[in-house]
Length: 326
Image 1 (tube, one colour):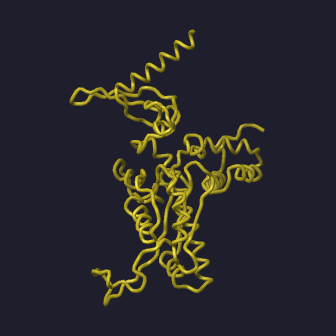
Image 2 (cartoon, rainbow, N blue to C red):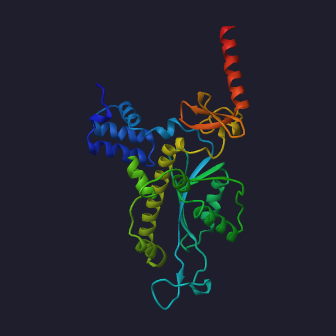
C-alpha cells in the first residue's frame, strides 16, 4: 500500500483520528480500529498520528512520576433574602458546611489509562481521598489547570478534614498561571487553548448546575446518570490538560530538574533527561556573569545553566572524542 499522508485525509477522518488518540483507550486498540475504518494497516495509523503530532506525549516524555489530575466539587447552599450581590457569612451556609470532592480523575504523564474515583453513596469523599492520596503521594510533580488556586487547596483541605497523610513538599505546575504569565490569548480557558492549537481533547460540555443538582439532590437514577456525566467530563479535562502541557512545555521554564533527579549531569535536559543537547545561546548579566542556554534536540526544551556546568558539558564531548579516536 502506498503512502497515505495526513494532508490526504478528509476533515472527518482527521477529526476521528485525533478524537480517538485523545481518548483513554490503549493505542494498540485505537490503531486496529482506525486501520479497519480507513482501510490501511496499523503501522500507517501510527505514521498518520506522528505526522499530526498526536504521539508527542509518548515520544518526548519520560514518566518521572508526574501526575495530572482534576477534581469536581460539591455545592454548598446559602440562606438569604434576595438575589444579586450579597455577602454571605459561614453561618449562612445551609446544611453541609464544607465543600466535598464529588469526583477526581488522574493519569500519569505519558500513560494510556485515565483513572477516576467518586464519592460514595452517602456523599462522603473519605474513601475517595484515601485511595487518591496513595497515588498523589507517589508524585514528584502534579499538573493541573488552575490547580494552585483550587484543586491543590481542596485536596489539602479534605486531607486535613479526614486526618489523612498528604505529601507536603511537592512541585506543582499550574498550566493556567504559566499561560497567563508568559502568553497573551483572547481567552485563557482550557477549551479555547485546545481549540486554537488544534487539539481535539477538549473539555466536554455538560448541563451545568442541573448536573450538580441531580448528583446531590436527585433520586438514585438521576444521581447515577449525572455522576457518570460528571466523570466523563472530568476525564476529558485530564486528557486536555496533558495534551496542552506537552505542547506548551518547550515555551515554559522547567519547574523541576528530572535529569538531576535521575542521577544525570546537570547539563542534561531537565524535562526529558536526554543527553542530546547543544548550545543555543549565551547571556551576559549586568554583573558580568556568563550564562549558557542549552536546547534539547528531542523535547526542544530551552534551559539555562551556569558557565561551569557548560564546561562540564564540553568536557564530556571531549572525553567522548578521545574514546572514539582511541
